[in-house]
Image 1 (cartoon, rainbow, N blue to C red):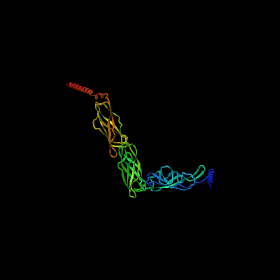
Image 2 (tube, rainbow, N blue to C red):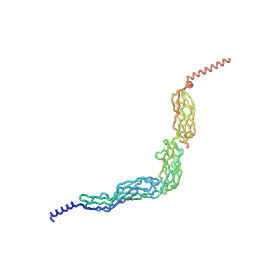
Image 3 (cartoon, rainbow, N blue to C red):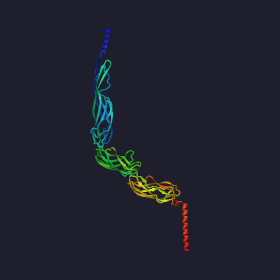
Length: 436
């Protein structure tokens, strides 16, 4: 073929290609996602635990077939990619509670993993054993794509499929001692004082603890502070309830309300290893601080006067006090004529008692209201000694009136004394004169 004929041939071939309407070619793809799942880390848990359960989802799917043509377009989605993956963990027949909603994890390409974390609570009465948690995976993938090639461009038709699969995630509930505080009763427990807590502790686990001791612990900044923390109970079989008694003290800042305490059990398991159970928290009611109030009205005295004042004390707390003694502190211009301590004895809540003090006030005292410090020393039910917060005994020093003006003024008293002496002398004189 001559050179000219070759040029004409190739020119006609190009023109034929340009005026050809369109021809079709198919791009067939095979394969799909292959998903599996497992727990990252341990899958053994104790009863009563609340855990963050990390589940790894892995895609091991591959693209099995892909046919290329000279003008096949690039198809971005792969049949082995799990698109819009959503994971839902369910409890099934396992003694657990799943607290996390379904999680959207996005696209998971082949040979990749993604982690989903589910907050899971193991029931406190869960029997020991191995259980399966259903993990439901929802996703879509591209099993097929068809390509149409035109003279001026390409068109690709995608066909997606939706999958819904369930995988089983095994977990093991360990055989151990798990506790539940059945009751926690206070005895003489008030703010700023010592008392006892009587508890009933039940082993809700599936194992018998050997050489067990129940431990009482302070909960954070709770005002209840254990003084005796350990009670030895020996063997602690499953389902058994044991009594425990602890001595505690309550800080003075406590209010009249319920405060938490924590309880655990330290024991030997079946393998002879000393372990500690999960803690259980119990609420313990605390009474208000022992408090007193002076309910008697203010006393009134004149400068230079002396009198017995009556002071009434009331127990405004929530618990009785014993061997109570009231004391008053006299400061200038006052003084105590006899004892400054008065015995009260037992004083129950909302009960009052009146005591007396012999008080003198200097004649140069300023006329005004005074407050004398007073306090009560007492014993509680455990025979511990306490002193109350200071109280004020109010005494009003007022100007004398009537006969008190004379009795409290030394000049008037001198005149009265002189008059009395004169009268007595005159009577004596008249009596002697009559006898003569």
